[in-house]
Image (cartoon, rainbow, N blue to C red):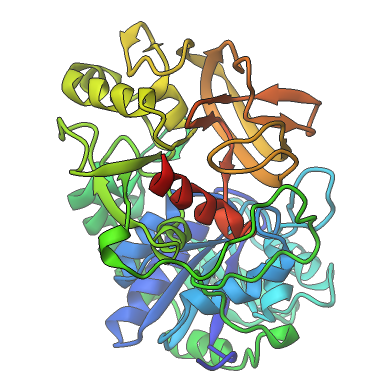
Length: 471
């Protein structure tokens, strides 16, 4: 594919400005024009890509320069944008907000520079008029390498308010590409970890995305936005698309501790081990590349729903339980006793089990007093405290995912507590924000709060699938 795919980055001065509304609405509006739209999200967030997928009919993908490294942002972007006419990238937090203590790393501005993409700044104009010009000028001039190609004003109150804002922006020298009025119908409900995922409110989410598309189509200059995207040029650095079949090694991290593949990935379908991946409303957090990597490593990936399925998929040789909201569905998960027993039996057999965050809670003895799978001798409960942030981690022992010494970067995002926080054999030694051990490794189980992106370490999926064959 061409490395000059048209692209835009939708950013804002701060969270809550309307990035998701504009980005999702723009994706849907472009799709309605007959364009194949590639949806992307800066950072580790799993929920927004679900809305992006509804808008475009394509898998929403993340671009995280902390989890995957800056050098994989371009290749992962091009991988997701294969066959597309245009790409829309939704930013994270404020334009220049990155990983804590790491400067611009993983900020929207950083990713925009890595992609060579123009930025459209979404500004909440609800409580200002002439001051909007100073705000836009400041963001547009802060970093000369970031090209702010236009502004979309959100939550504009009236025609008179719009007139004042337009007059002010003429002095800022940044084109105004859209004006959106307040529209409650585009709002999406939130709870303790952000927006409610699409999987839990699909019909309502479809209506919300349609409303976003209508609002953006009515209030924005789609022709000018498309022209801005088409002026982006080639992705810098000669990037080529990432591929799960032969993912590129991470050149800035040590390969110490990784198990190199022994020959090509098996292609014999009769030898493909079944890897069951938890899905449904309780387990919605997963990066698309994980399934692609498992498949490329020779696995047959089968999705199941722990809320409804009473058995694991036939022939399950390994189990992946990602993130989500088991705390919201604790009673339903607990009531599905046949599946809880099946998971415990599989783990007890020594089969590979990889569990992240929600998966960790599900494997515990109990969650908020309700019986879970009992694979781990630990209990989990809801907490008032939000645990949030990037983590730099190293494998402190061998597991089905990594050999001792393997370094990975992860992300924590939860309002739960697991006691104890680690087992006799922890999963990770976490170096940020304070040194500690975390998670559980026992027999074939690797369970941890850390969300990781397997594209950052090519050996992870290969190692897991190989253990599925031999366990």
